[in-house]
Length: 538
Image (tube, rainbow, N blue to C red):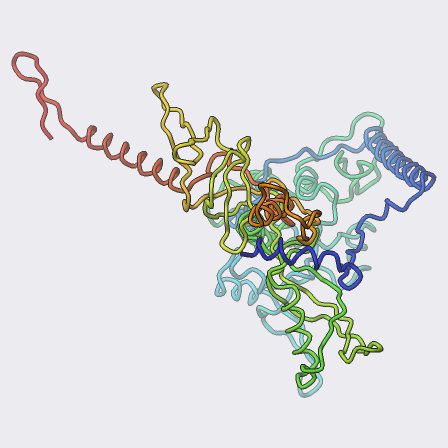
């Protein structure tokens, strides 16, 4: 029906180009307007930028390789995987190392005891840890400062009251705060672990001042912090052997958590995001390829409203006139118009001399049937001919599947007037699968064809030629117009899963039947009689 209306009425609409214009889409490409000189200039700038970046990277690598600093090796941390969480038992042990060893010199002023809850300690354990410290608080009602036990809201205490006291106690060196030390050091936890376990005697030619120690992982090799981790320097609550490497590993994991307290939550969100995006991607692909038959086209037209419609509101009259003019018609290079979506804007109305009607320039959006190439649709077989299989969607009939786009090998059966897929069998034979009229068929849009059709006019010679009837002239005109269908879709079914739906349903049923038969055979118990002949029973 839509195709017929398009062939009869679409030509007149297509010819009225001055009255109906498409809004041109913005050109997203900015390079089309560039001159050759501009293109060469930007290409040269891009090449120079890439070359300078490569040179800087090469120089940086050469400087790192030429220095005396040893780069920490990459350690196989259990939390280094994309979806791996921190080892929370190791975090708890690392807190013990910090509390008993590191806290003597280093502060963690950005970590509160409440942060331990649910990570390494229970709420009761975190409260006990906080209560073990003394906090200077106040003033009270009398204006005096006082000492109180720590609370969950308190932060880890600093070993020194100020920076000067810290430097005085460490030969002028200031112990850094460890709250975000892993994020602040290149190499992260690999650097921390290597630094804590990398103390050696200074090699020949390396002179150290008093209070300095040799550590090749520290820049310059001379560090003011003495080695603090030794075997069995502390005892773990859980009984883990406190070797120096175990202590370094645990405190590095703990410092990783303090630097990135959102570590586990971030990876949990990654899993959720990947799962959600996978679902949305599959859904978007399905909608894009299987469901997106209709698009919104923004159009511009001058709408004529006759005087008998002046009793209506302007917007209502415009909507009625647009639907009357476009519904079920084909626009060249736009598609088959289905229904009005909305009116974007109305400009001033005017009346032309000699015409009592009102004319209004309107910008509107119209729902148009135009499936993208590659889209998979399901329709019904309308007819078969030597040209191929003609498919209808109910509201659109001009869909053709040519012989070259059918399942191979296929032939046209003159008797049945249907195409037949000669399905090859495992035994070398063939099974005929017919494409009967009315069968649901799934196909993929391979291309679309727009034709600028013309109105059907009278024959060039008004007098009928001898032997030609008026009915014959009408038939010839119809055939001529049929050959110039304003909008046609060329489809294909020559891939797995496409074609008549009953084919694949029958194949699935056959596979299920074969599986059931094999299952029944497997459930048969075989017995051997005295003569060795096989007797069986279910």
